Length: 243
Image (cartoon, rainbow, N blue to C red; front, side, top):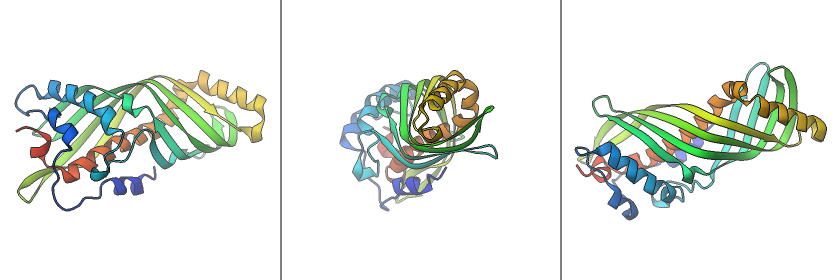
C-alpha cells in the first residue's frame, strides 16, 4: 500500500501545541469517571462533523476520502491495482466499543458502518479463483454491514511540559456481511464476459475477501491512523481529556 505520502502529509506538525477545536470541547471526557461510555457518546456525535475536514489540524475532508493508489493484491497469479480511489460514507461510521489500557498504552475500538462505498479506476490481470480476469476502467465496491476492530499501541512524549501521544503500531480485523463488486470494461469491454465475471465475483465474495480483504482493511486502518495522528501530533493529553 503506497499511502506513505498521504500519511506524511496528514501528520505534519507545527512544533507547538494547539487547543482542541471549539466544536469538540463540549465532548471532552474524564479519564477517571465512566470514560468509555462518555467517549462512545462523544465520538458518535463528532464523527459526522470531523469527516467534513479541519484544515487547521491537517485533517482533510473525508467525505469522500481520497486515496491516490492502492495495490489491492499482488501475487504470482493475480495483480489488482486501484487508482483515484474515493471512499464514501465514513460519516456514517459508528463507534460501538472502546477499551483503554493505560498501563500498556493500547487502545481498541470497534466501528460499524452499514455501507462503505469505494470507487475509482482499476487495472487487473491474472486469475480469480479458477477464472482468468483482465481489464481496466472504472469500478465500484460496496462493503455492507462491516465491523472494523482497530487496535493501536502508543507512546507518550513530553514537549513543552505537555504529554503527547504517538501511534507506534496499529492493526485492524474486520467482519463484513456482504460485498458487491462492479468492474466495468472487463475483457476489453465485452459486456457478456464482463457481466458473467461480475456475477461470479459477487456469488463468491466470501472466498475472494480472503484475497481482497487485507488491502481494503489496510486502507481503512490507514485512514483512521492518519486522522488520529494528525490530532495527536498537535493536541496534548490535557486538551483531549478533562483530567
